[in-house]
Amino acid sequence: MSTRTSRRWSAACLAALIGLAGLVTGTGTAAAAPVPTPAAPVQDFEIAPDSAFAAAGSPASALASAQDALATPAVSAAAPTVPIRPTGSDPQPRFPIRAAFYYGWGSTSSHFTATYGTDDPYAAPGAPRRNVTQMRYAGLNAGIASWMGQGSFADVRFPYQLRAADGTPFRWSLYYEPAGRSYAQINSDLTYIRGKYGIDKNFLRVGGKPVLFVWAGGSFSCSQAQTWVQANQSRFYLVFKVFPGYTGCPYKPRAWHEYGPVHRIVTVPGNSAAVSPGFWHTNSSSPILARDPRSWDLAIKQMVGSRVPWQLVTSYNEWGEGTAVETANQWRSGTPYGRYLDLLHVNLWRSGV
Image 1 (cartoon, helix red, strand yellow):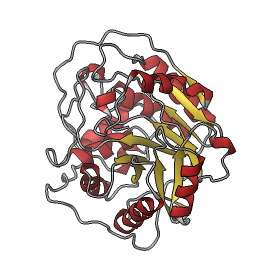
Image 2 (spheres, rainbow, N blue to C red; image 1 turned 180 degrees about the vertical axis):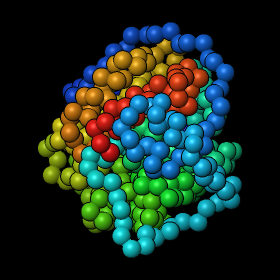
Image 3 (tube, rainbow, N blue to C red; image 1 turned 120 degrees about the vertical axis):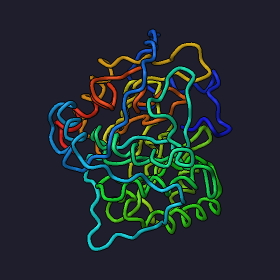
Image 4 (spheres, rainbow, N blue to C red; image 1 turned 90 degrees about the vertical axis):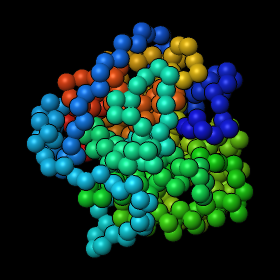
C-alpha cells in the first residue's frame, strides 16, 4: 500500500488493520525487536538465466550458478516501448501463483537501508531488472505493481518493470489503488490499462484475461463491488481486497485477497494467503510487527501448505511501511539476496514454482 497517497497510517487505520482477523484468518505478533547495526553493502551481482534458479537446492548453490552466468544488460534509461504483444503461445504461470506487492518509485525507510539503493528506474535504470532477478530467485513468478491512475508516477514507471521481465517467465500485474471511483472513471481506467499494458507479453493473465488486483479502501462496499463488476464487462480477471460483508455480496470478483501486513500471515480461505516479514512504518518509533526470520519461515511454510491459488508476499519493496523483503543491510546473509529472500527461495523452490 502506497505511502505516497493521501492515506496515512493513523491510529484508527492501524487499529482497523490489526483487527482484520474478524474478516480473514490472521496471525502475528507486535513484539518489538532490536535492529542490527547496518553493515557495508555487499558487492552487486549479475543477472542470471532461468537455469541458475532451476534447482531446489540451497541458496548458496543457486548463488554460485548466478555468479557464473553471463550478465544481461540493464534496462535503458529511455522510456521503454509498450506493449509488446506475445508471439505464438502465451506462456503464463499456473496456480498456485506466487506474487509480491511491488512499489517501483523508490520508497525509503528511516529504519532499514536497502543494500542496492533506490528501485526508481528514473534514478537507477538497472533497478527493475535487478528486482525481477531477486523475485525470481525467491521463487516468485509475478509482481503486483502499485498503480495510482493514468499518468501517475507509478503509471509512467510501469513500462520499465514490464520490459525488465523480457526473456524470463516472470509476469506483472497491477494493484489498482484509487478504489471508490465512479463507473465512468473505472471504465476509462480499465480501457487504458487493457490497451496499454494488458496485452503485453509480460502482463499476467489467467484464462487469457489480464489480472488486476484492486485495493478496496475504507469506502469499498458491496455497492462498489457492483460498480466494478459492471464496469469490468468481463475484460479482467479481478482480485478484490476483502471488505466487511464481502462473503454475502452477490457481485464477486474471480478471487479475493487481503492486504494486512501487520499480521505475519492472513488467509482468505480458498482464495489467497499473504505473508509479511514485519511492519514498521517510517514515522513510528517501534514496529507493530517485529521482524523474526524464524516466524517468517514458518509463515511461508503455512502459506505453501494452504494450497490456495494466490500466494502473496507483502511486500517486495514497500520500505515506507517496513514490509520489504528486498535485500537490506540489516538482514544480510551468505548470498547477495538476504535472509528473507533466501527463506522464500528455499521454501518455494522446494514446493515447486
